[in-house]
Image (cartoon, rainbow, N blue to C red; front, side, top):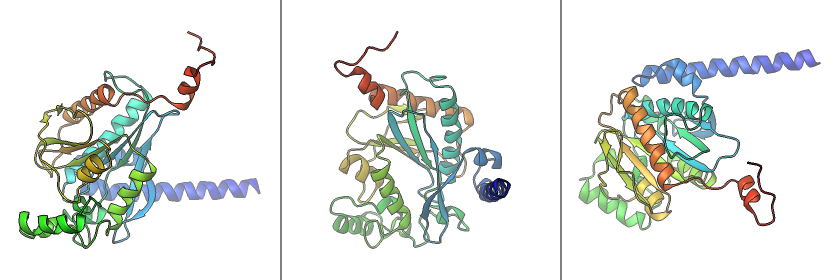
Length: 297
């Protein structure tokens, strides 16, 4: 009986690994500077969410035993911004290295971060031929979030400010798209202390939220471009009060060099340590409670 169970487990494991290899081969073929082995090392998990065309939306979690900060990092909200997904995969590796050797290469960083990555929120746009900004229903996911007065403002903005640009169509109603609903639900269930959304190709750093923004990440300097109806920065940063750092890489087709991506990662962690700070975990709060025993030095 035990041998039969072991055989079943081994069979499922091999099938899972083969499936993961197939997915990662597709991502490696599509994304610049991404190797299949790097994708496989990311430990992608099926988030039980699907795109309009039924593609899996994958996540990757790097979690210490007692996280005191939760950070949600999103790549590929716009499918034709290939560099954003590629950098998300690169940052997964850096987060794994940080978890293995906390504090190495950073200063003033939070002590225990639960990183959750969504490297390709819009897989239909990413794998379209050619890749598209919008999802399979032609909706700009970054205009589909339920900001106040969405029904009025999003349509006016689309018609008057973009000239009815089909690449910026906000959809028929907020959260009409499964990809946007998934991210909306993640914000409610994961409860991030910080959201980082990676885009391209404007080469600036944007920020929305109730705190002092980072002045730079690597070579990208802060240039707050304003808010838009239905955008993640507007919904998360302004409406919900969750700091949203928006990274606009300089090139949509090619990610920055590995050294530059690492520099941006280190600057992000430094700013997090200065502005977010570590939130006490349950055990640390208990140890600090009145009447509790003092920890041994």
